[in-house]
Image (spheres, rainbow over the protein chains, first blue to last red):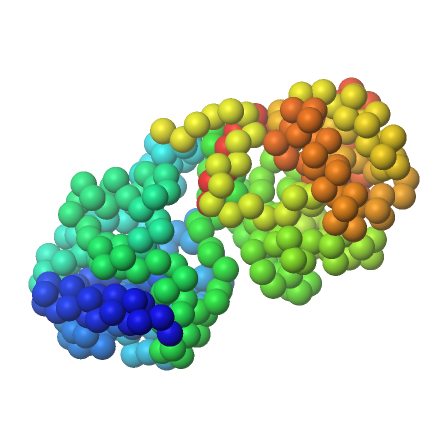
Length: 276
Length: 88
């Protein structure tokens, strides 16, 4: 373990203790799971609470994982239903869609923290995220949500390494952004579309695809992106048939596989639209 | 973007197919054996060709549907929404 990561973990503990108590927006992803474990150790279960916001854009598999992590590591957790899909600004799917989602989440969690006496509201943004285009971060800032992982400089790689050292299940899980990210900007986000995408990804996973996976929505056509390491194997004729059947079973009429594989975090411009 | 000229270029590479344009996504609809695409070398060449023809993405349709054949005849997507931008 690189000593810098260990030093940053100590700084994180100090950061949390300086606030006295904290309520975390908890997705069960690598970052928020690690932060929850450190926070419950640093603050104790009475001064820390993890809150899961559930909606159709939050994959059920991710929810199960989040509940499992909470149970295994004695993390106090509650759930609320979020209603970002009821917001026309979100449903229209502009390039700053995440802003409206996070506004809904934090508008619910900040008062909850106040009611329950938590001194701070925190999220799992890490140091790498700060360089990305993240409209959701603006909503967090507006509502006074803090990002301790980023504040102490912890990177994704360090968080994975520290999670492994803690024996945290899922330390190596691929990123799992919300299901709405599979729908091109400008195409409306609906519950039906999200359910089809989720069902398609679940069906593809059941075939044995293990790494990064996205089923992108193009109307009646689904475009599968899988990790480059696995791509060659899934281009074999018998496996192509299996993939096709799996995705069609979720309600898509046509299925294609991206020949470049999964592209993470990049602005995958299909029509020259730039994020706001 | 130019789907017809990409089609010709892919054919010359030994990938018999129709190409359907969904804005800057090229959907390759096989007309014969495309097993060469399982190899990284030919796949890289195909991706490069797609970029040379103005596409940002290229995807292989797994099982060609009648709808695909319709669209491919005209080199355009039958009824796809306007694809814009993905982030994650």
